[in-house]
Image 1 (cartoon, helix red, strand yellow):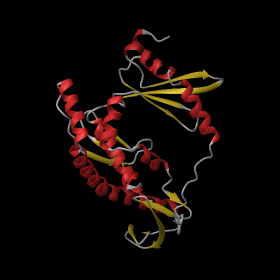
Image 2 (tube, helix red, strand yellow):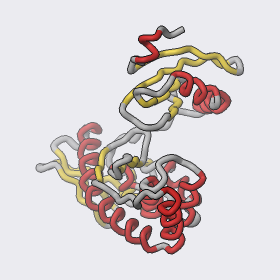
Image 3 (spheres, rainbow, N blue to C red):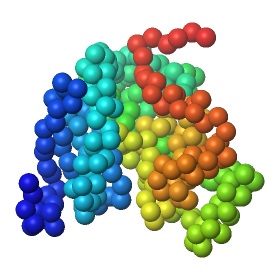
Image 4 (tube, one colour):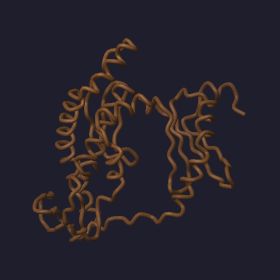
Amino acid sequence: MLDAYSRMNPPPLYRRQYQHQQQIFEVLIKRSRRKTLAIHVLRTGLVEIRAPLQCAWLQIDDFLEARLDWIVAAIQQLANSPLPEAPAYCDGEYHDYLGQPHQLLLVRGKPSQVVVGAGQLLVQCAAPSDPQQVRQCLLKFWRQRALLVLDERLRDCRAHFDQVPAVAALIQRKVALSGESANAAGKLTIRRMRARWGSCSRGGDICLNAALVQKPTVAIDMVIIHELCHLHHFSHSKAFYGLMDAAMPGWRDHEGLLNQPSWRRQTVLV
């Protein structure tokens, strides 16, 4: 039982142990400056709940209780699935760029750089036999490309978003009902993210995962449209998905592209 001080000043980290359907698991509650509750099941079996700083314990409990069946299923699915194989960053391996496989060609030289073309990624670095050095070169390349590609895709998607009649009608209806002005996109940030492809703040700032530049353009656009919809509906409500369907019909057909591996030992001939 939490005392009055703990209820008023919740700790940033708090652990609990749960048992459901004969499955015992630990829950780590992380509080931060966020607006919504989120839940993540890690491969270790640990369950993370990320909560706003002042979120009531009762609300967190209800959020968790409503998802116990899903949590157990997710833990069991992760336990039964093989660990994903890690890329070796070796000569001849294939890594995707905009959804297309490109073969790594590793050469020794300075300065460190990556050149893309003709279905290849030419990686030049001081020690091409060092996988970690090759990986760092590629990460830098993905970020550099992402800064250009994702900014361009955001501008194109924004123009498309504003020109779809069904989108305009839904936004105007929301404005009329709420009396609020239509939200505009703020600044764009590109960074590596482990668990998200994109995010949108209440202030309209959009953050996109640099790894998106490895995905097909249609998958990139789907993530961007998703975040643009959050400018008007911050939660994943029925209204949010209605706006998503209007802005990008058939977006669910592209969702699986994000989960496909962006590297392989050998390319698939088509």
